[in-house]
Image 1 (cartoon, one colour):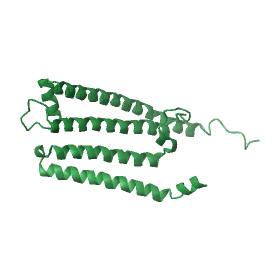
Image 2 (cartoon, helix red, strand yellow):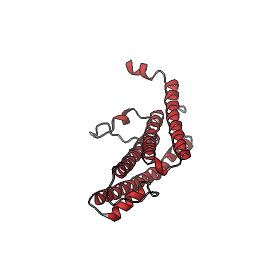
Image 3 (cartoon, helix red, strand yellow):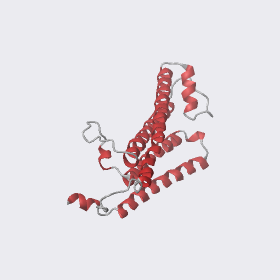
Image 4 (cartoon, helix red, strand yellow):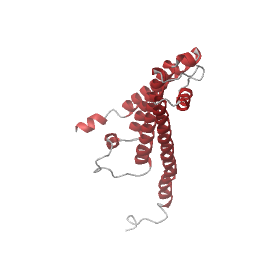
Length: 200
């Protein structure tokens, strides 16, 4: 009888420690607000691009400077380079927004509480098998994509950057790539039996 009886105080500390995971909730809510800011920034840049295409000189000057071409003389019309840099900037915002979604949804599901989305038609496919290791690999891959966009923007606008800056960004991108590969390799080493378990 005494073995089956559990003292109310015996589980109090573990329950308190486990409940502390809810302290992360304001962090994820803050990331949602950050995503709202990114959505606003996306539409501001998109509106400027459309206005510049329609001949608005103020909008043209704004996107010209925002695309990192401050050292050159602003043109009186949209150029292919400017359009490319602005579009890459928009893609960059989208990819960072995707990264935020992975951190918010995956992090909440992994570290805070289950969302019970099994029957939801819009449940992300990757959420079915998400865990801390999978989340790290996916975040590493997303960061490589974002770094690639930044590197492409730099190369397109290379005349406004020094050789030192170009080399530094390339080295940083390679470091991100190697880090993601190392994380994926470590996950494969630590969990080699995952595939065999699924077969059985």
